Length: 178
Image (cartoon, rainbow, N blue to C red; front, side, top):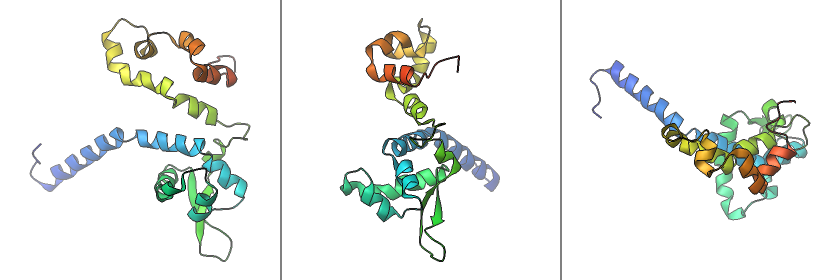
């Protein structure tokens, strides 16, 4: 693609490219949040009772310690998304750690209003796979993208897929009587 002449057109093209790239890589946000919930990072920091440094987090984090260098990147994404914030560890100290935000409370395991089960269900491969078949669904005779992706309807699949069945019935995900 040839760059248009002139600063205004170049800025417009750069902004358009950034817009497209943001949409291409947007899945990273959801998958990073899913990772944080699955690994219990929010619960670990909440139970700690005060901001945690990366070193403290890595020490108690349920992970392969050889991958500790990736924790700062994950935490930066989760800070950018508003699920953690940097905070002073204690008054009078300059050292900062990671602390939870109001949005994080909705993802804590023991929080009565937790939406963590819903997040895990909606980002489970069984429910994200149909989105990879959206264009095929528009071209075929199936009534849903779920049917296109899995060859059967959601309820039929839930009867054969324990994980999906667990999400639907344990958390009453698709009830209309809540």
